[in-house]
Length: 90
Image 1 (cartoon, one colour):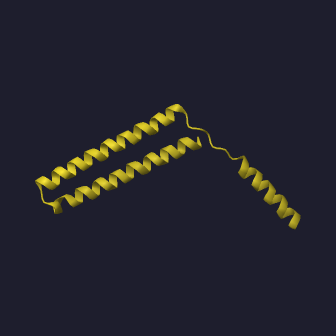
Image 2 (cartoon, helix red, strand yellow; image 1 turned 45 degrees about the vertical axis):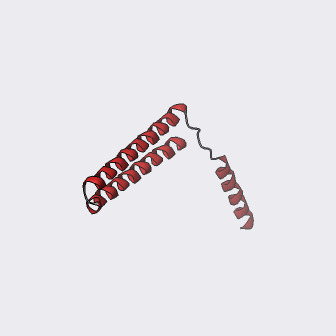
């Protein structure tokens, strides 16, 4: 029984060590950079809109807009990260 466990452990360790990840291609790296740039521009636009909202309206009325912007930014970042991980695995 002990010998079987040792063999099983050795085989599983060899399989785990043989797992490799593919390198990102230049196209995938460019896609990641483009998405990152797009997120940065969108975030900047949100901040400008929020600043304008606070100067025009009261601060309280802009809270919902701010939170919606943060949720959208978080969603975009998560989707982009999932795509990036998927590209690394492929």
